[in-house]
Image (spheres, rainbow, N blue to C red):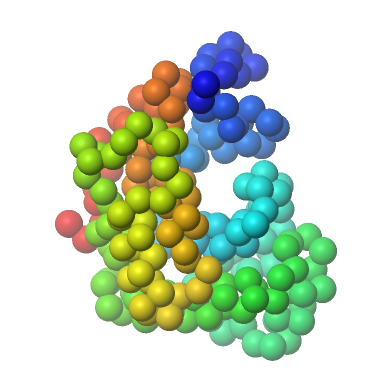
Length: 202
């Protein structure tokens, strides 16, 4: 079963009921469409940091990550130096993984290149939005042809820690896919938000 009653008795995706933070994230963020470049960059970074870990671990540390990475301001992160890497490796409030930290900094510079190419990070990633009619049942995939294509496009531009599974989780979270389970109380809210969402670059 992919749904379970929440604290208010309403059905929700089973994954979100492990903590109040996950529940709030599920109800107010996960799947709602996002066009803001800073939030999109943040999520790509955080999904990279999540690799091998649980989302709850990253979510619990999200405010620490935001403080450590200058609010995920793309231009500021792109200017991080080896001194910043040392600072981040000493920060117990985040995931201290040198490769992932270096990837986030490098990816900021690649995001600047991509913004110059496509006009915005949002316009680029949303061009890979799948046709909902082609998607199988919610929460039945961990990758998709569209996440594979976006992953390849990012890697070709020098991005790191953006494999197809990481990118699919990003697409789920940022509303490019409505992957709330059938019967979840938030699914219809996300669908309504997607219906009224102006796709960037179109």
